Image (cartoon, rainbow, N blue to C red; front, top):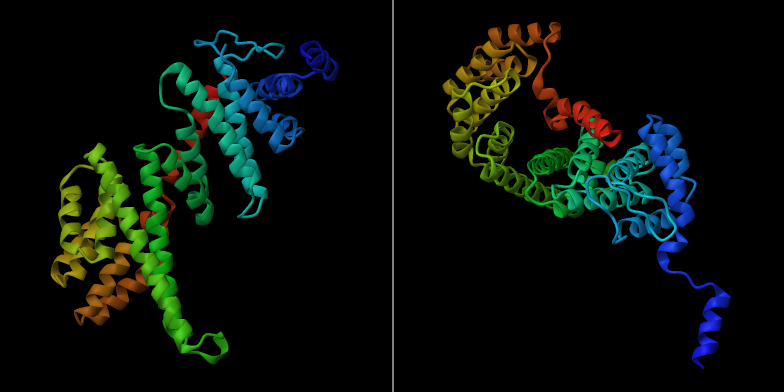
Length: 375
């Protein structure tokens, strides 16, 4: 009986799972070398020659090879190509590039981009374990999420960043980006509620009085939840790095939106007193003015807006001051200032880009990741 079983195994050529992926490993290795040579488009085309399930099995087979070595030493499988740490890093980067590429062409519910992110994680987490350092997937996933934020594709940013924050807890760049997404969605839900307040009672809208009220309640509930999640993320950042000005700035705004303007004033006044870059200096003063408005300290609000204008004569602070002057009964000066703002758009305003996160860091981070993958 034992001899018959052995003969059958030999006859049908039973292989271990890793052997089945050997041809695909060689194909992936060619794509990786093409990527490292700088031809991303050709490498992505080669990668796409295998279906997603085959790519997944190949990634698992490579990274589960017990002979994987540290410091770039080749780690051949039974019959597969030798995978060095540098090649593993490039394979992970190539899958992240594939995620970026397919997101640009796929719909919001497409599976392929997320699958590529998962395969990128497999390779980059393996490199992190071998080199005993944090995985490069953390920076790649921040870059993918920030890319979506920068383009204003907030549903994609939320999809990517939520799973990244869950997988890699306690990472400051990811926490900041996740908090920003929740901050954005809190604003979106507030805007929705405001719009439906009127539209819900129009016969042409198709909404009854009761259904409009339910929509309003859901929007307000979502707003509250998003503000809570944003606050939690920014507070976690400050718990890790108390000097993080971006987290303090955004937490200040969230506290204003939550109705705790006194807490916001404490945070924002500390930022105003510190020496910061122009963007932080301007926004901290602008948001401080809004916090004082919520507290009905209108003289202090106007002073904060003037202080912001002294940092940069951007539109949002001048419009806020015009609104404040109008509220104080100085309509003539308010109209003059608003008209001046309408005619002058030369000064870049940090507030208009506030919801897009730390967009100015994206290009440098992507350039560094690509350079490291091609070393």
